[in-house]
Image (cartoon, rainbow, N blue to C red; front, top):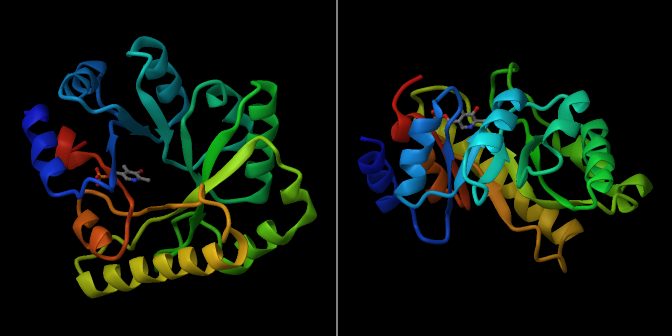
Length: 219
Ligand SMILES: *Cc1c(COP(=O)(O)O)cnc(C)c1O
């Protein structure tokens, strides 16, 4: 089933949009099935699970950390993680830089913005992001690279609301691009859209969707 689901989802995603297959809570066999169907990018939201799966699964998988990340756990994933989606504080960004440096590498990061109405979801405000990007300390972080931004819409049936939240995120991207990353082509991604809303997200400018249950079944 996973292979078929993956194909079905893939046909609805334009070729310039990256699909992150969200495999959290799913067993290794399920990931291997998607891998054998050609999928190479997988997303997890728990550090220990990510470390375990990285150790036992094929080494050419690109692992994305998509969930809230505690600073004290960055060291566990720093040697191998491809992209950290949910950078929601300056403290976390500095710790990622420190651990990346220890591993003699650069780690790609997305700044997570709070766009949902629910206050349970993590993320920066626009003002907080500005403060980070304008600080002298930020300029000195040589081992992180800001690859773009990420956000999660409110969990609701109200399509108009979801659309407006994605539009707000796209707007943040454009403003940041023109103010801070005009000559930096690395800043290019908007990670938005999950199983329930990725098609709206793509219509609103998403370049990276994080799809779990539509591929692997409900959790
Ligand atoms: C679980 C999760 C997803 C995928 O959710 P589905 O609804 O299963 O597609 C996407 N993004 C984040 C941050 C998640 O935690």
